[in-house]
Image 1 (cartoon, helix red, strand yellow):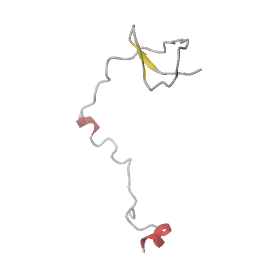
Image 2 (cartoon, one colour):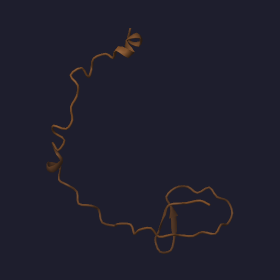
Image 3 (cartoon, helix red, strand yellow):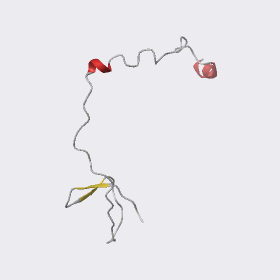
Length: 74
């Protein structure tokens, strides 16, 4: 038994990944959910700019050599 995800358009089934099965097989199709045609509204760049301010930091010694790698750097 195999499980294959795909899209059914009312007449044809298109798998989302390759299927490597030879010969004829009985198939059961279970409809999970309809695909949404609408795209979620995009937020303007002005709303996204700076939204991580104060949430991301970098250590003061970020570029300092690591003690564990000293023997490889000499």
